[in-house]
Image (cartoon, rainbow, N blue to C red; front, side, top):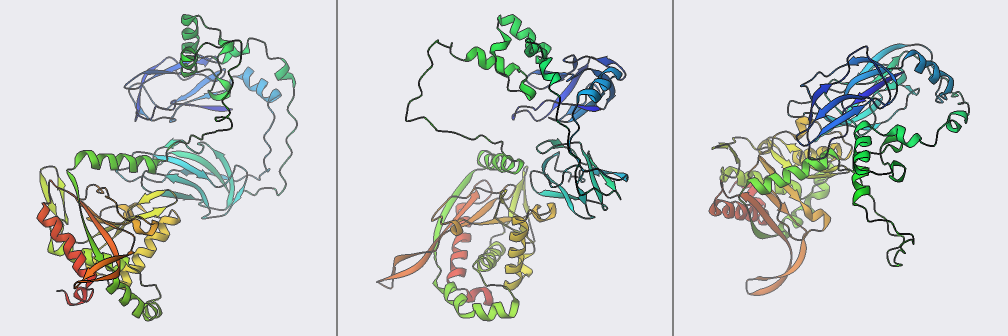
Length: 496
């Protein structure tokens, strides 16, 4: 049996670590809890210990190498005595018997240059299950998209080397497929585990799961290890458990009564997804690195609503897609960008880069979070092509099919919080772009028209922009242009 030796889970604020010192070499025999290697971060040195007796069979990362949390850095094989004991005591896992097949490596896809690593999101098959060619085996999540890894041939899923939630690199081996193998329909029943090993456990077995560093800490503090609750794997006591025990108030003989008002309250803690962490970091970066300012206006949507009502059936019959509002927004924004090139530019260091094309990012809500895929060359698209393009991006986002190409680029972003009922907001710039337009809920409001009060469907517009690059005159002029084009959509056709 081969056991993977991995880098410990790194704190959220620590991106990577360095192999400091290997205390063993390939071929060395090791004992359980023996310190194998020191992993150094920018804050602490972590000890990685042997989970059981065995022999070091492989060391894949040498001293000085940069590694990631949960990355495999070595392998330990069971020694002869250990292997015999395991064969005698370990209960086999129930799994469908398979015929022999050719083992095919399952690898993480090649990651884009801007993506350092990825996470195993979901395994869709289990070891021993029959799979067919092109069947999705596993979803690999990056900070931008979800990549599907499909079966290259019919066969049976073999060993899965990395579980869900683990961090992996491009082209890293994550599993095996037995190509051409077949699985039996009825899995073999697993024999009941023997109770003998459990009965043989000694009273001081708790001390056996302590790492050397934890033992030293407990000894230094004069603590009783049996009173410390372990939260590590298999109930292992960690340094954090010792720290928590030291900080906890001294227990009293009488139990503390829980107030009735607080009884039954629970909470759930889940780690942020890679996409959510990326969104959080980018939004914070935008707030901290730009001179962001937001200007507002409002638009009477009645002309577009009337036009849409008049031609919606004919439009759908001719083009096979419904006529929505987003195509009008994209058309108006594209025309405004032509008239105000500063808004269609971006800052790169000390330079301002002016773009002579019109790629617009469309904010799309997906089950994984908000993403901004790009609709390209909007100045060359008809209303029907824009509607179809937006629909395609929305479906791909919903199904997790967006590619890196779909997410790359974009000169300007449109976000429509109105679909969720937002009346007014201040959108945050989508870096490295310099501005973003927020659309909102269309709501009937009393408006003064030619000295009379009329009830009109009004919508607030919000333009957030980087004041380092765009002056107030350009930003207000840009927003007023969009307002005028939406209130008189004929101007979009006549280019006036």
